[in-house]
Length: 171
Image 1 (tube, rainbow, N blue to C red):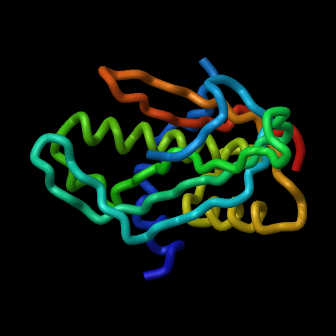
Image 2 (cartoon, rainbow, N blue to C red):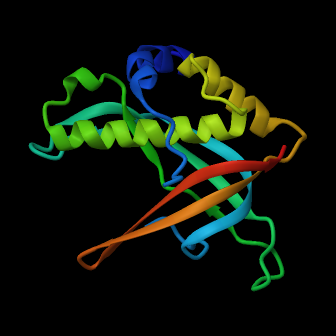
């Protein structure tokens, strides 16, 4: 099955997702807050697994992860290159029975849609076609420079990292 076909199967969840750009074990990241970053690539793992929280059931999913480079990094001779938090989207959300897992899937879908909206200038109506457009834009000769918001959430003794693309600076 092609990547485009997989995303087509996930079309309904994509249509229902709101684009989330964050307005209102990953390695080194920039400090919390906003940073001008080049969006270097989008990596897709079509054979990922989504684990439902309540009972540990595992379902086929797609994991999408963006890679960035700070546009200016006075602390290093070469600006920091870092991978964003993976967005793990279940291929068939009707399999999820746990409300928390449904919410987690919706949040990640909305975050991905926000990334797509920022990179493309508007939220695409077609998930597979939009993903192809993002890939083509990132693979082109033109650098994509965006404001990236790094979010750190501390729960207990763990820190969860996430990033959201706020707006394009240039492309």
